[in-house]
Amino acid sequence: MSTVPLSLDQIYDLAFNTLKANGCDDENAKILSTLITNAERDGSMSHGLFRLPAYVSGLKSGKINGKGRPEIKKISSSVIKVDGKNCLAPMVLNKSIPDLIAAAKENGVAVLAITNSHHMAAMWPETEMIAEQGLVAFACTSYKPAVAPAGAKKPLFGTNPISFAWPRPGMTPVVYDMATASMAMGEVQVAKREGHKVPLGTGLSKEGKETTDPAEIADGGVLLPFGGYKGSGIAMMVELLAGALVGDNFSYETAAKDNNDGGPPSGGEFILAMSPDKISERNWKDHSNNFFEKMKGLEGVRLPGERRHKNRLDKGPRNINEDLVKKIKSLS
Image (cartoon, rainbow, N blue to C red; front, side):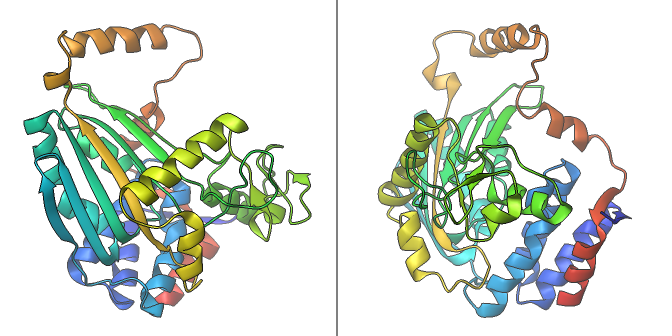
C-alpha cells in the first residue's frame, strides 16, 4: 500500500475544501473536518478521510443537508428531543450536546433523543465530550442492515455501535467505542482496500459460508455479531434504543427509505448522560480511579481509549493511503 504523509492541518484543509465544494456551508464543513482530522490524529483511520467520499455522495445526491441546522426541543427537564433536519450528525451533536450536559448536571440524568440525522463517524467524540464535563455517557446508533442475528445468515441489524465514557477529572476519560458486529464495516472495508484478511467469525460470504476474505463480506456478504447470542442481544437493544425509543427507524426501515447513494442514511441516536456528583454517595473520583489502577496493574491490560489518547500527543504528519487522497482531490 502506497501512502503519502499529510500534516494534521493538511488533512483538515483537504476535508474542508472537499466538503465546501460539495454543498456544505462553512460551519458544517468546519465541524465535520475537525472530526475527520481528530479521527486521523487519534489513529481511527476507518472513521477519518476514509469516510469522506461517502459523505460527498450523500451531499451530492441531496440526501444530506450540508447547510442545515437541527431543531432542538426540551420535552422535560431531563429529555431533549432533536430533529436533525437531515443534517450531518456532527452538526447536530455540536448544537445539542451542551443542552444535554446542562440538563444532566441539573437533574442527575438526562437523555438526548436524535432523529433524522446522518451519522457515519466514530461515536467516541460525543461521549468523550460529555465525560470531559464530569458526566458518565452512553450513546448508540443503528444503521442499514449489515449484521445477521445469532443463528441467521441474512442481515437484520446495523453494525449498531455503542460508546461509553467515564470521567476522570484532571485526566483523560476512559472511553470505549465498539461495533456490536464482530468488526465495524469500515474496518472490513479498510482491510479489503489494503489486502488484509479478517479473523474467522467476522462474517459470512453471500453464500452463507464463514470467510476470512473481507471482500466476500463487504461485497454481498454479511457481518456477524460479536460473541454470538450475547452480541446479538446488545445489537437488538441498540435497534430499540436508537429506533423505537427515540422515534426513528429500525435498520431495515432505514434501508427501505435510503436512496443507496453510498452516503450515510438518515437515522436516530440515543445518548444518556449521568452525573456521578448527584448519583453517588461516595467519593466516586477516587473510588473509580482505584478501580482503574487495579485494572492497569494486571499484565497486558490497557484502559479503553488510552491508545487513542497517546496517539493524540503526536502532532506530526499521518501516512494516508495515496489512492484515497487522489480520490478525494478529484471530488473537489
